[in-house]
Length: 377
Image (tube, rainbow, N blue to C red; front, side, top):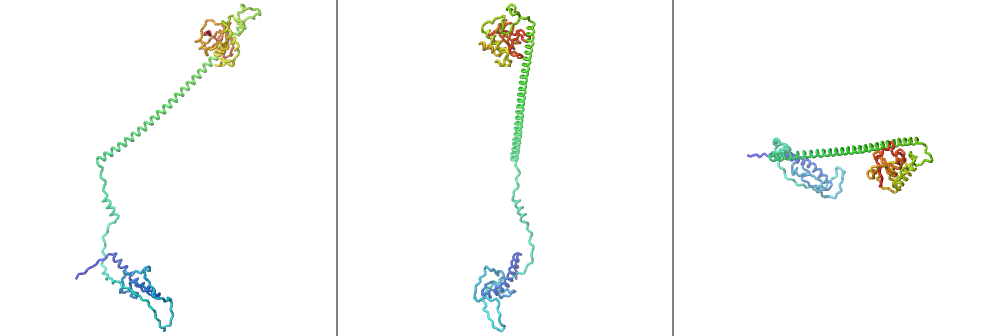
């Protein structure tokens, strides 16, 4: 005789236990529900008999007894109003209209086999670790770089290093050029400043020399004037009846002269020069409001109708005709041609001096060293 032993898993055993518990609960609930519905005149159809015993397995399938109120099929079989409480004498005969309750038996379940001793399942590896190991096994290891790849990488690194070096050199060159440009600009600025200072120094030196020359000229003129005044004070008084032959002294400006002008134009120049006596001195001046020496000569000749003379005494010395002895109207240049005046006769000259303006002074005064005598043609 062969015995077949069926091994059930833990899940199947739990499912069978739940079915058994549901059947027990359904039996009790089925009778209660049937009684309530019967009292209400309703008919309840279920898979278990309402009058079945709790410990009876007759016409019962625990796996199909699941009461769900939403799925119940309820049908009213009586229109009698439900009475909650009825009172009657014990001797009275009572009869009830019982509702018809029908049930359909479920197939009888097979007997459960005897439980077998449980066997411990083998310990399974953790899924995460297994998956990780599988992923690690599936992921291929990176291949080692080949010789060509190493050479290409080395070449790229060398090119990058050369580019960085070239950039640093270009930056250093730009900085050096900017610094050199700044130095050149600073040097040019220093040279320009030095040139301006030198020019200012030369101008100041020239101004000091001109001032010293004017002071020396004024001093010589003052000395000559004092000498002339001293000579005039030593001359005897003139008689009112004196004639020209007995007059050995200097005559006042505009008086009788021992030399006559060479022409009428010369006399006009002398007259014009005498009309400017008393005008103040002004460097560069050419009018009665202020004269310098050459400006006074040009003014007198222009007034006499003989203009177009050189503006400076040096220009007069180089362009006009030189003579050995002066005549009235001639131009007398002195002190290295730096001063000039108009000869009026009797060894006297009219010129614009820085110390006394336009005045008459001696031809050979101490400060008046004659250097040339010129005559306009």
